[in-house]
Amino acid sequence: MILSYAAVALWWCLIALGGAVALGSSLEQPVTPLLLRERSPRLQPRQTCNTATNRQCWTTSPAFNINTDWEASTPVTGVTRTYTFTLTEVNNWVSGDGGIKAKAMLVNGQFPGPTITGNWGDRINVTVINNLVSNGTSIHFHGIHQKNTNINDGVSGVTECPIAPGRSKTYSFIATQYGTAWYHSHFSAQYGNGVLGAIRINGPASSNYDDDLGPLVISDWYYGSAFALAHRVNSPTNPYIPGFPGSPPPSDNILFNGINRSSSGSSGSYRRFTLTAGRRHLLRLINGSVQASFVVSLVGHSFTIVATDMVPITPVTVTSLYVGVGQRYDVIINANQPVGNYWFNTTFSSAPCGGATNRPAMIFQYSGAPTANPTNAGTVPPDSRCADVLTYSPIVSKSVPSASFTTGNTLNTRLQISTTGGISRVYWPVNTTPMKVNWGSPTLEYVKNGNTGTMPANTNVISVPTANQWTFWLIVNNSSIPHPVHLHGHDILILGASPALAAPINPANRLRPYNPSVDGPTLKVNNPTRRDTTMLPAWGWLALAYRTNNPGAWLMHCHIAWHASQGFSVQFLEQLTSIPTAMNLNELTANCNNWDGFYPSSAPFLQDDSGI
Image 1 (cartoon, rainbow, N blue to C red):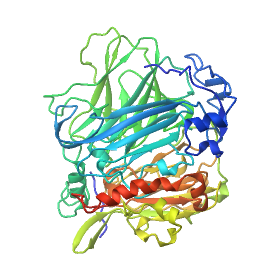
Image 2: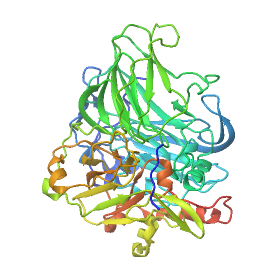
Image 3: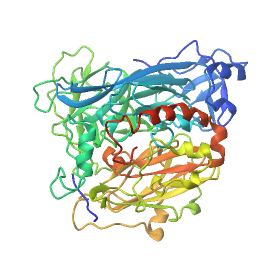
């Protein structure tokens, strides 16, 4: 049965040491900072050139700047940033809007969790202590490529066994990129209970600014447990929208770095950021939602976009900006308006890509203005129709051969209801198969044991064995729901996509298939928009490419948590023979042994979805 549904400032560590490393060398292996120093004996004190009037420069000796291709070369500072995250589980937690969340899962007792901050080229070590009562966990660093460190990508059932309750694991990687990313758990729908936070890697920018306001995590927020919500969304018998199995509820609120007024206005408070008149401010936007995409706008001001996800672009100035689930934008706000208070609004599309029960907003307050609510509500921006802008131009150009794109690598998805063991469920299969991983037998363990050929079909493994070639994919969406598609370990070159539909839930809609003779000439192959998360249009197609330059098992999935739970995912097994030499797969063993000791014998809940 096939159905569709509706629905602060940038700083520099002067003690850092300078140096460069060509990516793919031994310095990228998961080694200790001591080994890094031993292999770079001539590192000299770094000379920074990154100032408010020259943000394009990063260092002069050695030279790293906005034009540096960090896939080819990145600084090695010799600095290690160390974080400890303790995950706890709280029933009836008082949220940042005053509402009561039935089940919260928090990082160091807070939502969002602490921001990971470092400089381009630093090593980041994150020790995760799992004090959750009922769940395993793993932490994915969304947007971080994990060059040659796929084992630290943090996907339960793919790159590791989950961390069992009462156990811990340390993730370690070099920040080969710079910009804005985020981390979240990758264990079913768990991050919807609160396990997420921002990542800020300082580096150059394509336009000048005075102050870095830091990350702004905008996220939908449900008072119910994410697992209870997912269970109902996965059931075809009791949908949130009658007659539309698989339909999710609107969120109870949208939170801005964890706080907002409640939808009733009876509790909570508006988040406030401070602007200084006459200065330019960098703002790092992150959509950390489970379901909701939205358009953001700041009354009386514009945004100058300088990065899409972690890809610096030629600056583009806009008055509103669509942000899909998992996407990030670095934008600059020029504080050139009269001193006062201004609404920062989030607006939902008429298309089915999320919603809330209130009108979510926060306040940007100029320094010196009285603390008051703004009086100008602003103008509603144009409907995004849940569609990405695909005209951004990356600073570092990447192009693909135009003749190489074919429809041979096609991934089809649609909503489907299937019955197994007498139980009906909603799925989002890819090429007829919804993904389901085995938490206790991750893909990398199969690689370690040399038996990937025995992996079950529903792990949705796609082999891409050849190194350093462009691989092309056509994703086809036979449904009324737009999907944010995220690829781990790489940036994707977005060659083209179907135009967004004004009314995707119209029952008369049918698939608009890719037509090589008509659509082929429209594909952009010379320096197209590049990022790690992009939108798949309703009843349409998405054409993308990525380069096979990073050995590992890399997930590509819809970032709507319900759809990932329902199986909308594949994994690319990239350069299989190179994986064991790129990383130490023996590091899997202790964590998997701990997991086997907990699951299933001591687990209060058993896996009932894709597992990712």
